[in-house]
Length: 199
Length: 199
Image: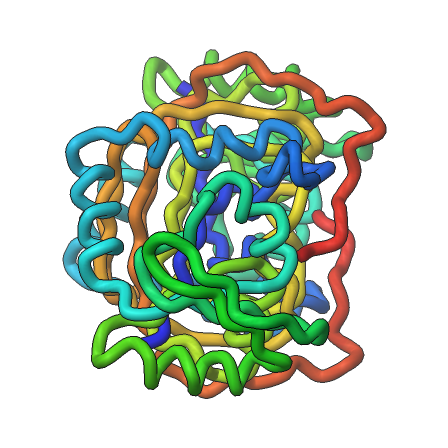
């Protein structure tokens, strides 16, 4: 099963502005991850479940670039596939290896094979949007942080329509854990439908 | 207590594109309100609670314009204050009256007085954003519809930062009911912080 696994603010940002190697979550963006850095027992259980059920990871090049110094390993203890046009020898870390793959579909195929029946976790805003539009995502695990950032990187920027089946909601003081299964085929919106002024 | 009370899609839209009197929720936007049009028992209870605890309503001019034909009454059975620069005599409906007030702060003051200790409900994307930035909102009741619309009117477009305390989450097949109390003073983001490309 391919899981997208993202923390967003109430106003839809998955990182603050000004992402860099020094600030991988952007300005104020680390506030999104307070539930990971200072977890309640329920948050800790959620993290433990993720680690126990992950079989492989697919991540974007930018997520790899800004995250590697933080992790000092693969992001989860599982084979990790980095989608990038720049070819690169596999990188062997403590828990597992990074493999560099030129496109998303190929990375997902390799990750599914490597996962041995466990979940494949998808990381990164751009890849998540691409995978969503390609109908690849089976389940969304959205962590809704109880903050508004006001600027940064929005997670959902696609123009297609999607329908999900709610699978669960659990609120802790730090975050609201939401699960949704993808159900309906995506319907690209006609090109004349753009954002309209608010009223 | 001033409550903002809005249904949004997972990608942050509170209406589809192309809002008009004929399509008050825009193209496909009525899908956001399936939980109201075809409620489960839990959704029905939520609606009943809203009706039982509302003392007054503050709404935007555009919400009034596109909603009136649908409601054929005030949106809730309570005094309703429309924020508009165009002056207008009060409009007496079956349940209560619409009063037209030139600015948001004045409308909220009048609504609080009229509510007799019950809640004031705020309706409309623009007003909600203004009230949020002015620090007027005590509690958010966000209904998260399990769909992505891909285009339309975004609810949250402000640049300020806000912090909330999670008060509850309940998921039904149609919608996820979320409650948040406003806790932290808003911090306007510095002007150089703009949206950055996704990575």
